[in-house]
Amino acid sequence: MAGSGNTGIIRWKKAFEFTCLGLKATYKHEEAFRQEVFVFFISIPLALWLGGSSIEIILMIGSIVLLLIVELINSAIEAVVDRFGGEIHELSGRAKDMGSAAVFITMLNAMMVWLVLIFN
Image (tube, rainbow, N blue to C red; front, side, top):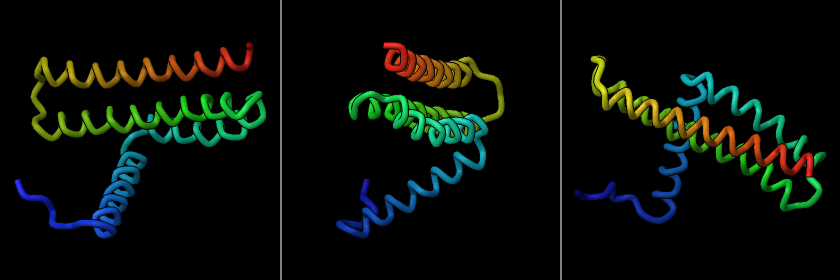
């Protein structure tokens, strides 16, 4: 399969445009992502205040960034599954459940990071 023909700076520019479209679509259509973005913006000043070192601040903010990344992937999985049919199918449900489980485990990870660093 042939590529887009875009190379160098043009490829980077196009990739950035697609990234912005993906972020905008996810923010528009996914309530969970909007809530997690809110948590992200709250976490920045909290991490700066509560983090004892640069590493702790990075871990605290990074755990929320990881949550946003996993939510984006989960939303992409859901969009693809929904695109290919409205009928109930075991594999479609399994894919959506697995994506949801990934988000949940990432939330647990973020909570654990924050709790350990705050109460350590």
